[in-house]
Length: 487
Image (cartoon, rainbow, N blue to C red):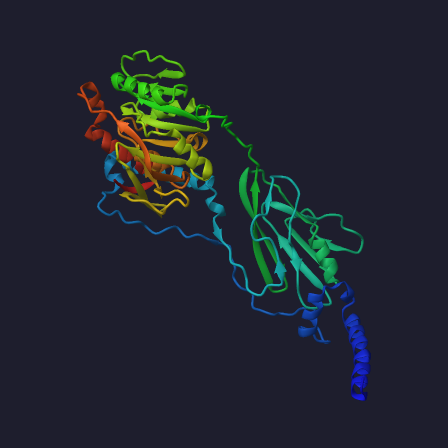
């Protein structure tokens, strides 16, 4: 080592200890800092410090309520309120407005707010996934202050639907507002402050099984807001799929007058699936006995309608899935229930898989605008699909499918079938399930359709009266809070 190198080495040996001692003198908590904090300090800190450093102007980060959506436009569809008698309209609108207000509360609309994350904040906090059980004390994860050196560090937290506290507070630790909605923590040591933040808990004080609170976390001129999800855990409801198709699927049929066609359907089912359960909901005027192995025949009051029959049939299902068929369908050599099950088992998010009837793959999308709270929404049925279902050639996401589909029993029970709709009703089930049921339509899942016979008495019930159509639109005006509906 030459003389110049020796001099440099000696200078470094002298300067480094002096520098470290200076840092320790300025910040007594220096030895507890991480290497990242020391490096940050060495870059930005100066020997002359102030207790309060206003780094950035305080931004407006919310919460901002989501605005009432604008009024929607009814294209080629008359306003639904035209189907309500004029002498009833005013009173009906008042009742609808009140029901919609209560619906918004039940759906948690009051918690649907916009929060913004401020830039360059020294505060760390949970942005998603902090969930608590009602009335149960829970540690808030991830609360940390990362900042430059101060002579005093002070943070505040506040909530609205619960109380805050710090666990195991020791002598010399400064915490104000224990078990209250406002909590203040202060310390001359950043390490101690973060240790206290690591022990902050939240306990909801208002019992509710599904709501949210907002926590406000601030330091000097910095403030952040993060959500606290309050949920009562639900108990899983599982279906044992068993070992074969008979323990996985039940076939459902709504029967009305057409017993000849019904027996043809049952015979075709038994040709391919001799042991699968068949449930029949029958609202014929003079019901005939339908007997056979593993057949359940439920007699309803006469002419209760299609959806009332569907509700009855679905209520009796004990399998994970059900297959819906009309009483005049017929199973073909290529009718394979297993193909439906394969798709639903592979994609657990799916709720409904539609097939095709005699080559007809009826499917549609529902174009829906929420509309203003005063007027209601606009919905229109259009033919088409959304996007392909990955991994399954010929399957596409849709909002509604043909009247031959397999569905998850629990998912459909949650939506249900509106028994007000007695005669012509199909799209309406998918309308009620919009946003709750994930639906696909698939090529190749075929079933046959029997030749149409003389309709006779059945035809008089099959085709609705003009008054039925008017009542139907009026019903949707109130029930679905719609301004207009187009088919």
